[in-house]
Length: 188
Image (cartoon, rainbow, N blue to C red):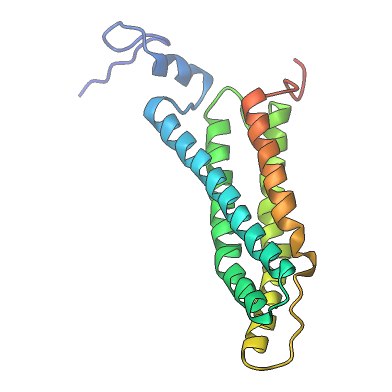
């Protein structure tokens, strides 16, 4: 069994191929693979933003009502729709973002805008688990106590910040993706 090796930039049959040129520079996502990862990346950001909107509706509904049963319902719904769906969206966004960066000319730490997007994603994904999760769980527990007839203080407290900060930072990341400012991290 023989294997044909083509010179860089040239296919086995002597024709020029994009994939052959790219292999000389390192691994690259190309064609349908790149588009599939890009679609998944955009969809994960869209779902993350959507979850933030749902969270904002629930938090501000709870803040805007005097009815304890409505507050309790909002807190219980928040427990279902916020933490784990947001974690999955964040990790999907992180994974696809790393794949897109590593498989393109931009690299993971070559350009300021890519590093900033990576930082935003890591920060928000971490905050979901270490800050949002305990707060949402506490609110849901307050709601369960209130629904069981106990005396509970139903207060959204600091929960107003996540549905404001998260979509703002996600939109900053979207703008960075479109405009790609600041150039290389290190000048050559």
